[in-house]
Length: 196
Image (tube, rainbow, N blue to C red):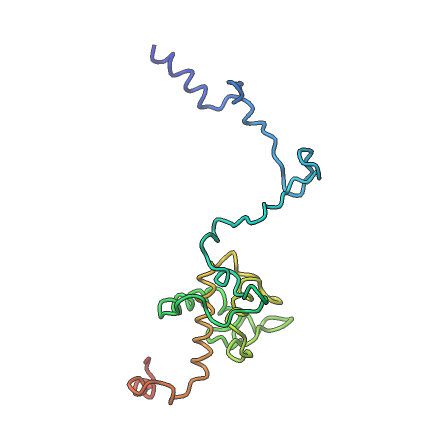
């Protein structure tokens, strides 16, 4: 008797295409593929624009400066990082920089790397010698890409991109620093050649 009860259960679980009150058509559902025609809509397009005011889930509750690096009224770049800059933020930016940026821009951000030497079209610029661009500019370049540099929006979250900007700023300061800029208690270590 138990075997007879298990047969219908096994039959349903195998995915048989018998129509149980409309369930059988699940294998044969119509769908719209991107960039294809669709007779369902009046304009015969399958792809639809999101409704006005739609906010992607990953952007809910986040500041537009954090997401774009731009000032909304005039479209200019924001001057400062919209996160609290801490040692942890800069160090995490350094890890991301080492993975994604240092191969072309060099470990010191000076544009000296083996990849840069082998680039035929144009070597990547030195980030240390860049003009004084606002922080939002660096964020936008990381997000959108620039020239031969690809966009990293899919690889780095907005917070990680801002962390890379913080690390680039730290690189710029470290390469331009003089011994007089170092706190007096850290100078003996530098003069010995060790880490501060």
